[in-house]
Amino acid sequence: MDSFDIPPGAAARVCIIDTTMRMYGMPTDLLLRPSVGGFEKFPPLGTWSFLVENSTGRKVLFDLGCHCDTKTRAPLIQNQITMINGSLDVKANVADIIREHGLNPDRIESVVWSHWHFDHVGDMTTFPASTELVVGPGFTKAYFPGYPTHPDSHILESYSQDRDIREITFEGHNSIHIGAFRAFDFFGDGSFYLLDTPGHCTGHLSGLARTTTDPDTFILMGGDLSHHAGEMRPSKALPIPNVLRFASTSKRAASAFTGAQFRKMNTQRGRQENEPFFDPVLADDAAVATETIKGAQAADARDDVFMILAHDMTIEGIVELFPQSANEWKKKGWKKESMWSFLIDLAAEIS
Image 1 (cartoon, rainbow, N blue to C red):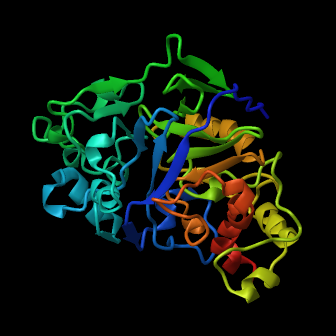
Image 2 (image 1 turned 45 degrees about the horizontal axis):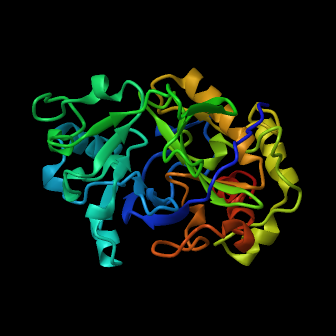
């Protein structure tokens, strides 16, 4: 497995934002295969957003969740939501959430979209024209202009209208490699990198923020490089431990299962015991998405990197949310508390 060496740099302040989106009744086979008995639908799915601020006060948001106004979504998006056969609830836009806590949206220098899907792009019209929009390689050609100029677009044209759009090409003096990924030093001080994590869709980005120095710790904002931790874990570098710690579940669940049971279940499904439970399904290029996941496993296995996938709700109730800082995640044990909690989704197969 590739290493995941990160150059030295400064720390950023990172906050995790609950975008308030919840999708109910999402069938698992739309995103994950092979199936696991008793896990036919996801628990309520949300999307995490991240506020990253460097030492000079420059502020960027990574992902925005879902637009809360159903009447202004592109028709293709509304049709997709209907086809999923679930229900969607969004209480507030991220701009409203940060304003409620005293941060004016005009203080946001940039918004980074991990990718173009409706549950990540939010509503850019809630930010002033001075807030630039940052997207990944190939994004502009593939997705702009949006609806209604292109009736089959998923993105509203108003999101990019009269706004600076910066497409990261991963070339130039701020571009390096971190592990298997091309990386872009966003602030130029080593505090926040954008990672080229392709496969899920054109221009997919992840974010890597340094949360402390001496020792270094990091939060990796995975976006949709993986939709469920079972696409990422276990791995050769991160096998399932014998004694499991489940967060936000009953005491019975925490004591009823062992790592050996889940390893056995995985082999009975035709997989290796230290191979992820699932393969990616919702991907423009599944083979490339699988390679991206393999590269991310090197980061996931490090105890100084906290991987937060966009829809991983196992961290809910464990992490502290905006306006609180997430920088002391390691000291507070958030990764250890949440690492294997996703296994509860699969427990019906062995109970």
